[in-house]
Image (tube, rainbow, N blue to C red; front, side, top):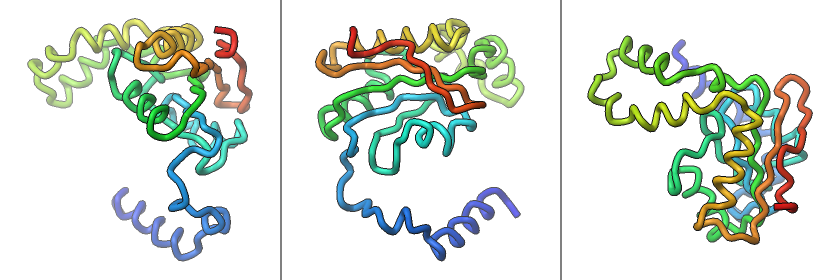
Length: 188
């Protein structure tokens, strides 16, 4: 069975026996996050079904944005665009940047990733197009806590983010679920 077939099979079983927690919640009621917050975090698989429950966040309460290494690389890249929409269209009033311990991006390099891309047939010309951004991103990220501080600063100082929106920085332990404050956005 292919991965696609496994996913579709799981979906058919899921909708046949839809858990009460999904039946009781009416997703068509509102697309607005009930707790008026946005979480920007990493795409690490260890955070799935763990981070939100560890924070007491339930379905429908927060906008969750993810990318590799919870990184912001430019003034209007996808994360900033998502936050702008979250704030101005969906009522978000606070932002939480959540990094995690043992992040795989901390050990990655642009040179290593480029080598793997070339080995899989990606054109050198295509890599040339993103070479600078790739280096700025991967070769700069070595410490997840420093990254959280930098991302909080990039979001808070972005001219498209209102100054009345607190931007918090947290670190998550993917083994224990513990969260620690890196930046208290109320104090900025």
